Amino acid sequence: MKRFIFTLLSAMLLVGTLAAQESYTAYKVTGNNVPVIDGTIDPIWSNVQKVALEKVPELDGAIHPNITVPFPDAADYSAEYGAVWNEAGLYFYFKVVDDMLVIEDDYYVDNGFDADQWWTDDNINILFSKDLVNTLFTQWEFAWQPGVDQEEKLSSDLWANPAVIDGSLVSSAWYNDGTTWILETFIDWGAFADGTAVITEGMEIYLEVRARDDDDGGTWESMFHWSTTNYQVENTGEGMGTMTLSGTEVTGLFDVEAPQYQLALAPNPSNGQADLRFVLDQAETVQINLFDLTGQLVKTLSYDLSAGLHNQHLDLQDLQSGIYLVQLQSASGFGSTRLVKE
Image (cartoon, rainbow, N blue to C red):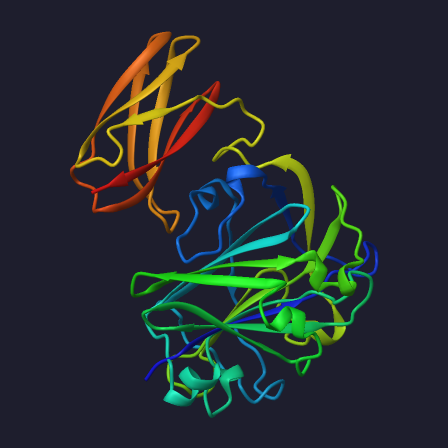
């Protein structure tokens, strides 16, 4: 049987202590835009910048016994991440495309991990520090069971922080369609420094994200990274990137500061035909984009329209049943709403 494990390591450090390689801006979420960790991928993730991880060409097998050298081509594998934040904590989105995800035996199903070395299997790592001040690293693992939106959390800290492990400060849920695997997870700020960390807009957080691919239940066949190829980044911190906590709210797909159109869609749910109602202040070329729950663009429509009220008819018969994010974009702004296709 095949199995898949997501691993989260975490490291938040004071600015200036390390030389960062890459940077990412995490925008703020409030109200209805806050992701709900329930196994259904929130449309807000379509509005968030995703960062693709890059394949590490080769690593010396002497560094770690779980590395196969040289790494073969990984045509079946890709990985990306995105993140948002608010006063409660950090929200992460991970997407992996992999046709060889495994659960190796029933022991894993019963106990949250399998009988052999689960850390040699497929996983994604994020490095944080426990207290947001120094390099006291911690590790969390998130595992997926086929057919069940369920995760198990393990810890390299030997369960030193039960509040994190039992889910009161960390929660996650899964979505998959066979070869696309998506994890949403929430990490409460209380998971760091016993909840005493001071979080401010503009704060910079050092982190690294890595993905490792195992296709046969043995050693890793490939490794992907965001900021550094330094395998021992959890020991040295060298090469970490930075995440900046922006005070600008996530509201649209391309420009978080653009004004929003107010959209109304009817009928909704729709059996394949619907009308999108909106008002333009001036003549515009508008683009209507539809995204599925994995964040993939599935349909694009473009119209040259005059100023005023519009009821734009949409033919959606070619879409599969499901939930979609409908976004209208023009040079003046954007708007979004949710569509249920029966």
